[in-house]
Length: 494
Image (cartoon, rainbow, N blue to C red; front, side, top):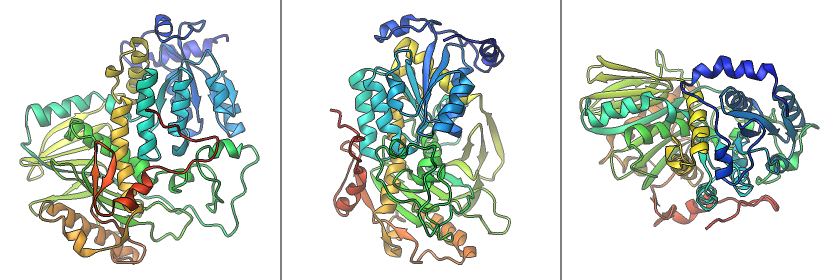
C-alpha cells in the first residue's frame, strides 16, 4: 500500500509532540511471530471509528513507527469515511480486519460491551492491543482479557492516558517520598459534569440502514431502543454501556489508584453506593447521580458523580471536607486529603494547598495522549509488558472499582438511613458527602429518600477471588457476568 506525501508531512510535523520518537524495527514483528510490513512500521487496525476511534487513529497515524492500515466499524458510512481519510482498508466486520496479516496491533474504540471480546479475538489472531477504557462491561470478562494477554503473550494497554503524563511521577514523589502534606486521610474523586436527557420515544428507534445491527450488538442482547439517538447514548443503557461511572469514573478512580495508592490496592473490600436516574424520565437506566464509598483496608475513598446541573447558588466544582473544613475541589478530578493539606488533581494539572487553602505547589501536565500511544508502540517493539504505563492488569483493577460501584447500584434497594450512617465511625466524610448529595438534589425537587433513589447494602468483596461474599452476595454476584448472545460469547480463559 503506497504512502503519500501527506502522510509523511503529517508524521514530520507532529513528531515533535513526542520527544525521541523513532521508527520501530521490523525485528519486533519477527520476534512476535508476525511478518514485517513493507515500510517496517507497526500496522495499526482501528476497530470502532466514531469520535474516539477517529481520534485514536489520528494519534497513531501522527507517530513515527506506526501506520493506520485498516479500520472496521459496523456502521458502513463510518468505516468507509475512515478508510478514505487514512487510505486504509475498511471493513464492517472486525473479524476481517483481524485476518489481515499486515495488521500487527489493534486500537479498540467500540461501544463498551464489545471491548473484551474484540480484545480477546485480536490476541487470538496474534495482534497486540490498545483498548479504550473502561476495559470491561463486567468484571468477569475483564479477567478473561488479562488471562488472554498472559496466555498469548501479547502487549495490551488500556486507554487511561493520564498514566503517561509525566506530572504523575512528580505528584507521587511529592506525596509519598517527600511526605509534603503528611499522612493521607482519605481520597475523593469527582465527575460533576452536566448532561442532557436522551429522550424517551413511544415507539422503538429505527436502526439506521447503514448499520449492521447484528455486528453492532455483538455480545449484547437484542433489545428495542427507546432513546432518541442511536450513537453515543448507548453509554446510558446497561445492555451496552457502563454509565458515567464507566465513562468518566474510570479516569478519576484510576488517577486515585495511581497517585494515592500507587497501585498497592487492586480493588476495594467493601462498597456502599447510592444514587438514581432522576429528573429526566428518559430511556436511560444508568444513574445520573451516583455516589459511592470504597473501603480498601487503608484510607477511605469516595466518588461523587452527577449529570444534573448544580443549582446551588455560587457552587462550583466538587466538595470534600476535613475536620469540618469544607474544600471546593475540581468538578472533574480528585482530592487527596492529608494531615497537612490537600492535593487537588485533574487532567493535565494539579495543585497542593495547606489546611487554610494557601497554595503550596502547582503541577502542569504534558502531552499525555501522544505519550500514551508512544508508550504502547515502544512496548510492542521491546516486547516488555512491564514498560507499559497502563498494562492491562492495572487497567482491569481500575475498571473494577467502576464495575463494583455499578453492581452496588444495580443490586440496591430503597435508601436506608441506618445503613448509610453505619459507615460513619470509620469515615465521617461519607455522611458529609451524603449531606452534599441531599443539597444537590433539593433544587431539583428531589429527596434522598425518594422512590427513584437506590442504596446498596454494604457489600463485601474479595479482591483475590473477585467475588462478593457474605450477606447480600448472591444478588451482587449476579451482575459480575452477563449473558452473551450466541456466536458472541466471551470465552473463559484459564
